[in-house]
Image 1 (tube, rainbow, N blue to C red):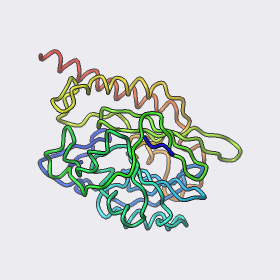
Image 2: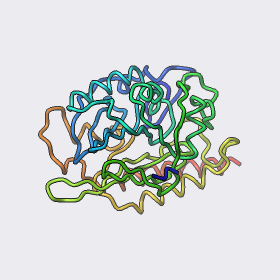
Image 3: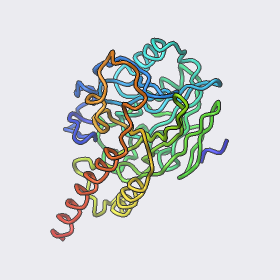
Image 4: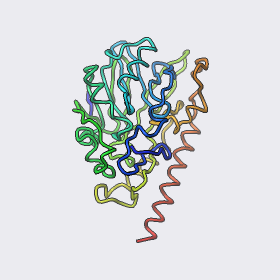
Length: 288
């Protein structure tokens, strides 16, 4: 296989106040029952922070790890679903901010799984967040560094047990932000699933260009175009709030494979964020 956060949640992004820890946002650590989303994809995240378990006959893939005592809560969720955390073979993430990767190092120790991330995110994860272009100097945004075993580039794939994830480089929010797509089978039907990293803009980010990220404007623009061009059925994302999980599902609801089928919702969410970006870019350029 070739494998090439902090007090307020605003549009599903990180917002830092001083060096406040991410745990101060209760929706990030509030528990939420695990459940099957569709096919071999399961939710094992908190109330708002997405952690996706993808099961296969040869082991599991875990996408994103959340914050707080995340290893323990994810382990409990995986076991509640009838699986073993120790069977996890690959750990990856949609982006390298604290609220999505703080548990990676501990989960790697617990499972022995390989950490596989986008190439631009490798240095960020191995620095424990210190190399982030916006929050690298914010103590509350830092996390336990984790050794990355291998990386992927745009359109590379991760394969395990017959499941193939395609990685899409969607930079802007971080330099290595990634969305994943995969096909799943359910009741004789094939669904195209996206686990999207939405291109939200953190407070304090200058989208017209930053010293540590001079190409940020072009990266955001390319990401919005790429996401609008995606043909998907099931819309999932890095935060529950971004794909309206709590409007579409309540704990105890009967399984429904069409529950998160929402291609129009995905397009609308991308277009809304793109408008926010364009408006901010225009304001910034008008001041120069």
